[in-house]
Length: 384
Ligand code: PMP
Ligand code: GLN
Image (tube, rainbow, N blue to C red):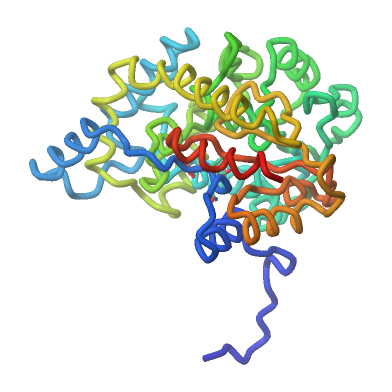
């Protein structure tokens, strides 16, 4: 069947996401899949038992629109313990259907026609299309090498009286860089006198390495009062298929967020919310993540030491970027496809995360995998 009218697409230039593309090619060719970011190991059986418990004890109807209060309370306690900042569970925290919906709804709630939104390339792929769907203009700033850092003078120059929002992401997907205390202070200084809203994507908040600290926007009072902070339990509890996350923001920003949230999903899966509320109370369930993933990063790096791939510093997330320029000058998408089809290791090229298709000959490999998967992939990478 085909629609015969004038489609007039709202996203005429949007192609299928690179994650869907690479995972599909990986499956078709039986490749070790280090592309899309999801673990290949089991999630906690205790967490599954809790979901089961709440399902069996009759918690299967709509949750309250902002989320189950027990979970909002547990998130508030977690933020207080991690960052020393209080968010009111009644008015300042909302449960969402993954971080993706939190980001979408936040942008939809605040960005109007002709507003400008600044993002940093390489940028997570959902930001720009969401801004455009809401009539906004995306202004791209490229992160600088080495280290994928933000040039704050450049940001200051890009801000105009139409700048509505700045989207930041730390720890950063796809590069694994993190924003420092100094970075946050610069951001705070630059936008202090404006009405700009910050949307802070912190889905990898519990995966930070080498003794570094995760500097959430919420730690900086002038930033916190203009920011929406986004988290993902899919990432934190290895359950990306559950699509559950949260957003925390000052009361008046949250009020606007909820006006939209109620028309997007109204509420999120009830029994999973209760289960995660229990699970979050034990700090161990998220505090051990950094050590767990640092060990996986180090194993992967050790295994590929003899290869021609050159690692880029990864300080957080569960992605390791590798430069392949000593192997070929193929463009990154072409090489990622060849690596998947001919050599059976799937990764993600970085150029789709840049507006201008910038290509530094770098591929991203997800190390949230069983050791045996990493060993299998590394063995192949060492032969190339
Ligand atoms: N932001 C970033 C930076 C991500 O990597 C992802 C993917 N996990 C998301 C948002 C979306 O998270 P979720 O799967 O919870 O929707
Ligand atoms: N966040 C995941 C990644 O970076 C993918 C999420 C998705 O497939 N949209 O790999």
